[in-house]
Image (tube, rainbow, N blue to C red; front, side):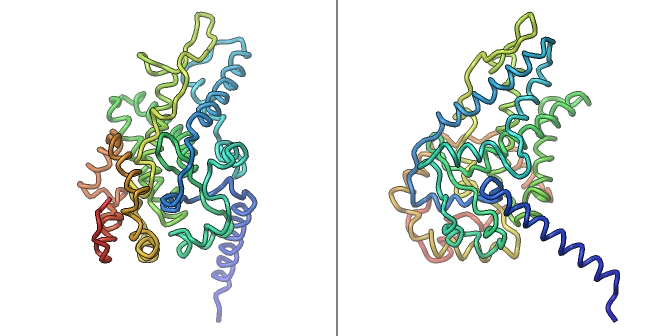
Length: 338
């Protein structure tokens, strides 16, 4: 005889899954959960850095105007959080992704649903049929998923909040930063990564950390802040934002590989070997990787995560055999490694 309690629980699980799927499908392209940087190996996109700089700049100006209209002094921390609110995801819609899809025609790839079938993630994630992929854009020669800019602005704010909390608790700046990074690792190993998609993205982790740096530089940076406050308490832009100061090659998941779950990796590996090992030595790919190598300076976050990996931290998995050169050579593609 079937257990009615188990049937009841199963019913609620199915309802929860349906609600999640409905939410994902309703949000459309704006809630693209995964990016496939390998798809961009075969295309050349124009640099959209200036367009994104303008978009971020306008959002910052909007936040400043609103705060200044209050006619009372607002702290640096409060100002930073108000700016962060400009990039908040609401009902599955992220303003950064919406801007790219509506204003950057010809600068975003892919946009057609057919590319889901060609993605290295297609066979591992059934919900891609509902959500689509986070498309690639190019900033300063770096190809990144739009989801990375959402991580930069949104999860970067969470890093910043934790960083300030730890400083107030008596941590040094280094300790507070390390705490924020461990928080990011925990999220990537659960709700923002493994649990949601089966992918632990080190590209996400780097975008998160650069988002922390962005919020620190808004007005906490005493040497060269983006914002200034006059004697009346009014805020203004002291220095224009340039995303090139934050976007780096480690945002590209084909350069900074993700870690895939045991069930996902064989399928992802097969897709990469089948589609990309033969072209990894093409002129386009080689030039892109040489460009990456020329300015791929390791951040504090990358070095700290490496320390945690070497110490066997359970939230810092090592994608040892999951790099393109290694798996392609193992598969018999012995041409020049990337």
